[in-house]
Image (cartoon, rainbow, N blue to C red; front, side, top):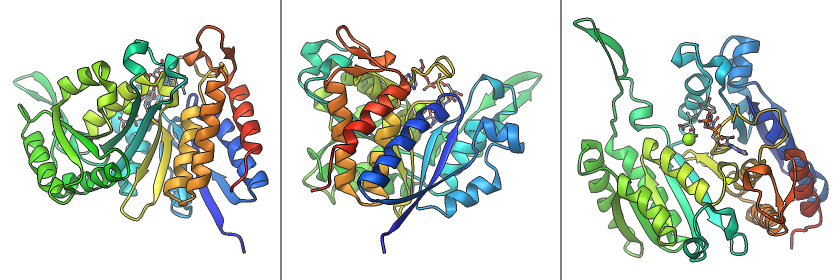
Length: 366
Ligand SMILES: NC(=O)c1ccc[n+]([C@@H]2O[C@H](COP(=O)([O-])OP(=O)(O)OC[C@H]3O[C@@H](n4cnc5c(N)ncnc54)[C@H](O)[C@@H]3O)[C@@H](O)[C@H]2O)c1
Ligand SMILES: CC(C)[C@H](C(=O)O)[C@@H](O)C(=O)O
Ligand SMILES: [Mg+2]
């Protein structure tokens, strides 16, 4: 009997449902043309869940995710829910708890500028023609995002707020091992990013990454302060291979990596736990500014499906095919508005999904 692949689909808010529609087209092609037994079940999450169930992460959604082999996530958040108490909002009420609940500490965000489509980048051709192929490895369930010592208080009637950055050594160790292992399968070049000239957590981060590095003598490790790293990425993007960051620094650095490749709408992500269970989502958000216009780029979501097949189902060939079809379509000049250049063929969200699924349907597993 064919293995059944059960995917919990959480479209969410804003452009989430729009790009997810294109994701379904890809899954349908895999089902029909690649004879895969894929079962999808959709659940509410984020603002839409607040509207329908009163909370951003309903029990039914959590149970649905638990009963699946992987989670495919669109995006959450938007102006409609911004005035709720912060812990009830879609981001802090659903996305962060989902990451924590499933222990998804390893966030992989691969950003790549393929040759022939360097013009997608806002950087000068002479810089990007040297190449850009980076895997951002972000710690996802620790640090300043999750520490409970946070809040807003008054002292002598002066209002203040605080958040606390804190890392256990084991949290740094486990994400460092992931980054080193991934570096072994790439160019063996790892840059760890911190702010060890100022922050205690970064001193521990650097010390721990150095200790872990002793187990990976084949990997060339270097450290950069985060301010310098943001600059070096723009100046010498080709010098990076794997980047290791804390939760907050990884959030920022990964958006920078995305725009080096042309758009946030191109950056996929996988968030994994020790057992390999994963949540897959575009690195970008619900993009309220372009919601409902059929102009959002569905590629980050489609590449996230590719990552899902790679990391949760170990179907590497399927994942490679999805990736290569996406880059073929881009090379042929099909572009959504966010990455449109002169002489390109402007397509809508749904047309991009149609083109990619059509090209995918011509492919076969060897
Ligand atoms: N994973 C998530 O669910 C997630 C991630 C980031 C932000 N958010 C939420 O999304 C909302 C908007 O946040 P923001 O505006 O800071 O970030 P955003 O990522 O939604 O948008 C930033 C910019 O990138 C563009 N963009 C993003 N994805 C795109 C795509 N697929 N195609 C074309 N352009 C795209 C947007 O139009 C916008 O100009 C907030 O509520 C935020 O908290 C959610
Ligand atoms: C929406 C937000 C909580 C989230 C994060 O900060 O992790 C997003 O920006 C991301 O990059 O996945
Ligand atoms: Mg982000």
